[in-house]
Length: 325
Image (cartoon, rainbow, N blue to C red; front, top):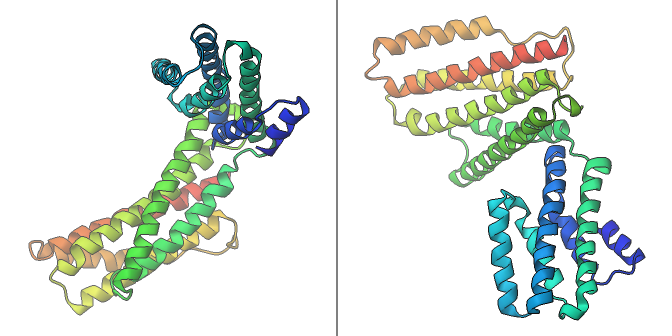
């Protein structure tokens, strides 16, 4: 924003604040969307400025004309599938049409140039100087989301947290899951659109990113099933201890995998004892299946634990493949 205003001052353009507004609106979260936005914005701004100049020259400037031009520009943008450019295009229309009349046609053009300077400056900085750091941003968000989920899962069965604290962490956890999904879709879109031109993303690592996200989704589903079914089931103290132990084991396993992915675990360090976990789990599953009518709610929770465990195992395989490629 500051750079665009400075460039406008070098050319002695007035109302350079419009360049700052354009720069803010032009910033995009991914390289692909930045390229696409640059082409779309230049096209949409040119159309908006051309229509504005036409109406200024032939009809002058008044609130009714400005309102009509705004409606016309929005309709054209939607027709051309340029919806994302509408906010900045309307800034262009207002900047150009706020010129006093046809005698100030060059002043109106100057304002159009100011908008273009702001747009292009922001896009070039977004591309060349401060490109998005996908991996760093994604992994940091995964860590934050996991720590929140870890607290919720570790205390889900014991029910130690107060209701207010649980709801606070649960709300934050669900919000972070949505942010992760948006972030993953961004760089997955970029890899699909740019292919080899994108040197930040690699196919095998994309699979790991997707699985990192998937394991957190499974944790979210597990928490929902515990909340909905576990406390309404017919259980004994032994059941409570069993489920608590299984969840503690899995959350430690999940933490181990995150550390392994980040290279914080020694190469010769082995994972947790999976066989003991499987044996105790299979035994409990058989007992529940023998009385399935009474234990249907516990079976739903067990099913979620199986899903969560399956995706953790898959994550470990993908991490191992990535480390040894």
